[in-house]
Image 1 (tube, rainbow, N blue to C red):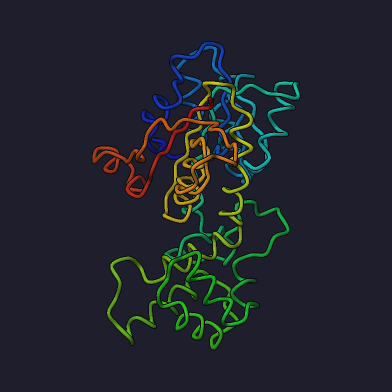
Image 2 (image 1 turned 30 degrees about the vertical axis):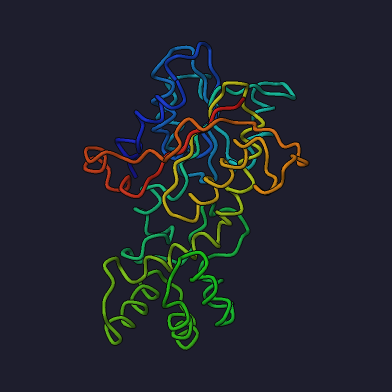
Length: 313
């Protein structure tokens, strides 16, 4: 399994985090993956340091080999990005780390999609797993598919996959259980559309697979949890850059950034502020940065990427 050659929107991320302008800087890459973004950060200046976190032990192994030449400037830890606070305390040996920049590249890496045994790809036959950390004891996608009642399955597909046909798909899944492989589930959904057209523009199983992956790994809960943790770690002037790949993630980040960058959260009609809320960040970019056509040609996964950046006050 070879690492991808080009990390998504790397130039925009380096510029947004001001990687080249900071001396003896300390960064956290909360979604290390194959180490592409971390490699770029460490290559920009010889005095940059990165704490890289990932739940996937396979990714850590690949990143470790890729980043070995940087020595102790790259510190890699098997952990979720939600644990970056504890990891940073241990890394810098201080109770109050002062981090220059934090990166979160949310979603599934191309490495994970390319491995049939991981169960993320509906085009590759493999076990219906979908855990970012296969060594964890959390439920697999197969266990969810085969155990949840029909209504809960339908709600899951609608809430996390924004799947409008969620009830019909859930009904067919329950009637066809047990389902153990990716292709079993994908074919079942595709056959529903063949018999009850019209066929959607994307593969019919796309939204269901997204919903299951989000549920298995509690992705939205993790995003909500990490935002205050990350901002607390940043020094004044430090920056947080977040890449999202679907509207559910982006909505959480957008709303949190909006609230954290606002001084008063009282209702607009209230004449006097009683909440005493003070902004803790400023928005570096009001609207999300999207990939250029050249970037998308280089890495098609970048088509749906949105980059939001905030600076600690």
